[in-house]
Image (cartoon, rainbow, N blue to C red; front, side, top):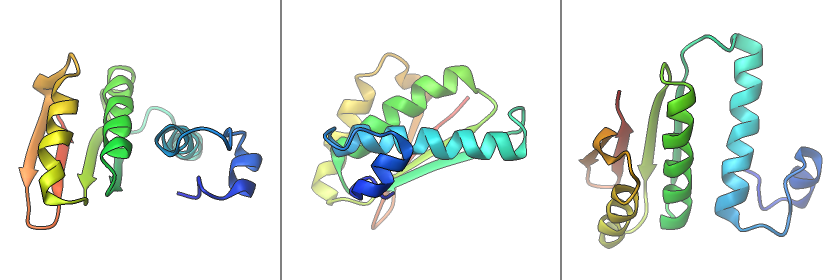
Length: 118
């Protein structure tokens, strides 16, 4: 996402001075809203996010968990592409959220695949 581009932030109304993880959750909201407007808000969407930053993945994971309550028909998946040693930190932070029984983790060589299930 172009959240480090000042023109992108200006044109979308995202505050340039905010942390990147916050800006990314706002930018993905804009993307999802546009997709829902174009394809019908009642449609099922597969929503995903990939990043190598623990804070970005955790922020987006928390956002997806909240959104899943509003749009349970959608599928949500995150891909953590950061350092292998940081995977436990990602899991710990996401598991601290109240709805952790809906999170599945799959270890792959290069990524940690995080799926929010029904």
